[in-house]
Structure formats: C-alpha cells, structure tokens
Image 1 (cartoon, rainbow, N blue to C red):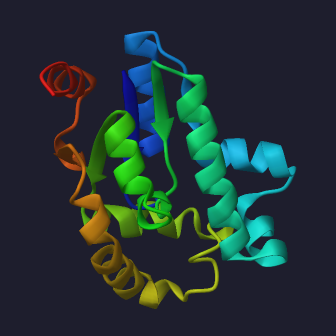
Image 2 (cartoon, helix red, strand yellow; image 1 turned 90 degrees about the vertical axis):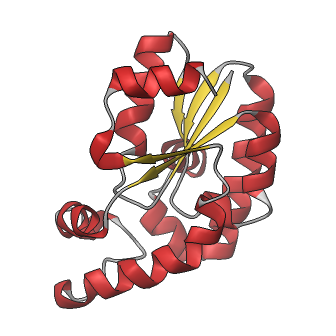
Length: 168
C-alpha cells in the first residue's frame, strides 16, 4: 500500500509519516528531504536560486520516481505538492491520500517557530502570518479536500490512524 500524507506546512506530515512507517514496517520518505538531497541544497535555497517552478518540477519527478520504486511506502509530501502537475490525481490513482487537516491557530503557533526555514513564509511579518495561512489554505483546500481520508489533526493518534487506514 502507498500512503501519501498531504496538508499545509507544519501540519505534522513528517512526524506522522515516521510513526506510520514504524508501525506498518514500511519505508518512509519526506519529499522535501529527498529533493534537498538530490539538489544538494535546502528547499529555501532552491526557491531562491532556481525558483518555485524548478522546485515544483523536481517535486513532481521525484514523487513519481518514489511511487514507481515502491509498492509499499509512506510519503510525506510538501504542502503544495497536491496543487501542481495533477499530483493529487496521480497520488489517488497510486495509493491512499490522507489530508492532515490542522487548525489555523495550531499552524500559526508551529510556523512562528519555523519561519527561518520555510521559504514561503520567512519574509512575512509575524502579525500577518495568520492571514497568509488562511489565504493559502483557501487556495489549496480544493486539492486537499480530494484526499481519500481527511483527518482533523487534533484528533489523530497512531491507533486511530492505523484503524482508519485499515478500513480505507
């Protein structure tokens, strides 16, 4: 089974990906980390030096490569992954897509601590971060809502996640 975790930056995709990987004894890949390793620079550097279009193209290529290489895998995607190159349709065809639907206030709290390492928000004043998140979520919701499973992040436990996946 292929499991794709989607959601806004800071929603816990990497954390829950590792948890699922451990409990299901499946490999887990963080798409951003794989892109960073392949390009030998951070996502932030890629955005700055090569642009978002280059990043999204590499993201799409690596998503497909990892999918084709692994029948059983947990893939933690980037926040924008489902929104480009019909990636949401591709992931749904190849496995189960799980949206970690985290509340805006929780995202704000988490992302305020991580701004320096997040290219899309690093230059946004703290006072404007919540409005940015709300706007970006509205833009991406159309894609996120297409997930096979929608989980309110505040209610997730590893047991509940495993049970939901078993019945999906």
